Length: 113
Length: 114
Image 1 (tube, rainbow over the protein chains, first blue to last red):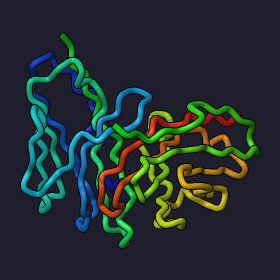
Image 2: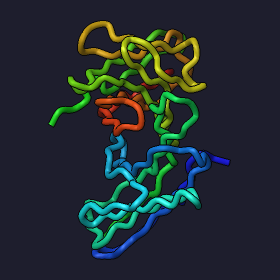
Image 3: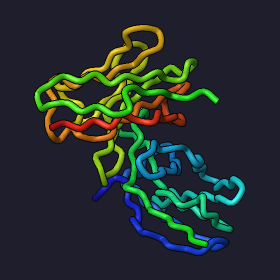
Image 4: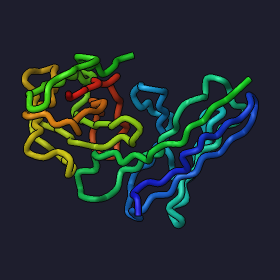
């Protein structure tokens, strides 16, 4: 089983749509969770950290379900500039270092006018 | 806003040659990382570095790879004898505190091994 799994998409949505991405992780002892965004041929950029209580940043809402080992990202009122690949990222408790980010393969979003 | 920088942006080399990829982490950050992304695949962790020693490394980071902080600002990744399968985008990242913390990525070096 892959450590971090995501639906690769692509998700093709019109401007203004609401879209949700899901991610599952295999290591139940994982400690930290993030959503990163990656534009074509660019570096990953942090979109938001994901907290157990759920958190919101403008149009973006992240949820974590530790029991189901499931993370979600909701984007409301999609903009053209949201078109990118969204990467689910986990830091597992493989050892005590806690420094290795484990990436999913990403979900591609394309927003059209 | 402080950024991680990397040089060169592109590097082409012949199989068997040594390459050194350079990074300047954000100045007050203490933890440094290298990741790679083969075209069309996911980003993969290579190594983390703190206090002048390796903190964690993956199975990919074998004896062909080494890292160094030669001075107060640079962080380098050396590949001793490149293979075709080393062709990838190599990202450097840094974080302020390390464990469980947000990591900030540089723009990457695209390495092509012929």
